[in-house]
Length: 280
Image (cartoon, rainbow, N blue to C red; front, side, top):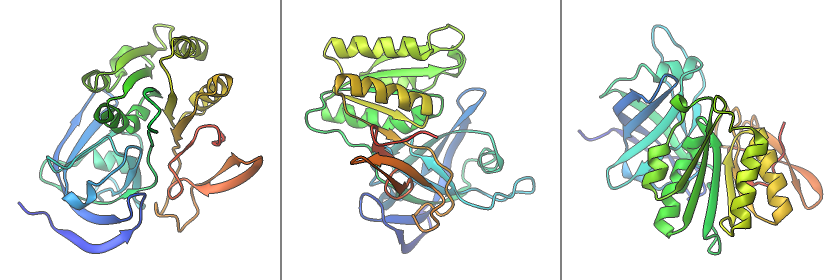
């Protein structure tokens, strides 16, 4: 069935344009006890995405849930050849609880793609990803791009326990060396993770570092990156209202050229130089 979509341009993104469009739910299934994967049948024009970009979702209003604002959500996968847009989300508040009630065939209004995504420079042949929980969703498209470019990928995946580790199969399919660390196994402490990364760097296996969200992981990669002169990028998580830079809700501080500057995560980001980002 042909999807109804609005013709008006909704804003601009790193790719030049973003659109508001009606999509149709193909599936909305549980991945484990905490996370769900939403697959949408989407028009081609919103599938010109970059890893690290996001969409603003108009969560449905139901008899039980009345979310007011759109919810920003990182892209888990975009597949123009199949006309699919994927999201991985944790059910926590009003908006995601409403999303969890979507069934096959339901419609969902989305706005995007929005923001500035990850980059892989020509001389970054060995890249390392570090993420925990749903942060792995943001890094999944980067793994696809690394495989497309023929780069070697190491993915360090962290979680509370092995049952909630996510995207392991996806990273393996992308040809990545996958290293899992968990709280219950006593391997996820920052000292151990730093030791793993330093060993990789010493073996010449890291040209760039990538992560998402966590202040703890940001600080870890900043310290290791500065110690060895390894560049990197981080996708920041931030509360947003408009998602297109007008409301100033998502402004954060950055260190740049010896000064503190302020930028909008939704517009100038969500991906930033890892050494310039500041934690809370």
